[in-house]
Amino acid sequence: MTGFCLGVAFSMIHAMIPATSLTLAWSHSVEHIRWEEDYAIRDGKLVITAARVQGNGAGMEPEANAVRRGDWWEYKPDIGPLPKITLANSDFTADYTLCADGKCQKLGALLGQAYRNKPVDLFPCPMK
Image 1 (spheres, one colour):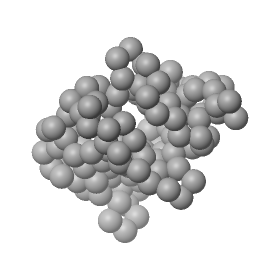
Image 2 (image 1 turned 45 degrees about the vertical axis):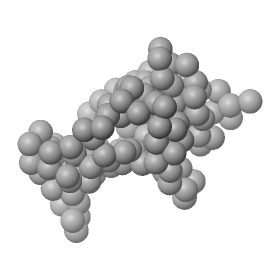
Image 3 (image 1 turned 135 degrees about the vertical axis):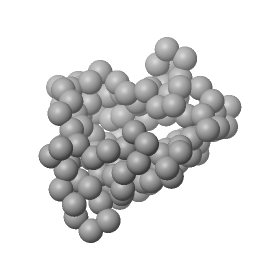
């Protein structure tokens, strides 16, 4: 089984989420607009399968292939498989929310406040 790992300081593992897909959500630091991205683990890499944004603003323009559904612009980003993504995790940004298997947790709750203001890597990891 695989899962998602959260690492600080050169990807040292600090938390694990046993799932093969998750949604990463946050609010834009300036516009305060909700943004969500869905990720899956395939062949040991992160693959973004869908994204949604509740509006547009500074640096938040929906992609050309976005479709409006209710309050959301939905689209499939054209990004290849990634070994990891890095989350800003600063006092200037709202806390990230990670949802998997119907359960959502704040990044701060997963890692604790000791890791606030430190970049956090999200990457696939084997679960034992």
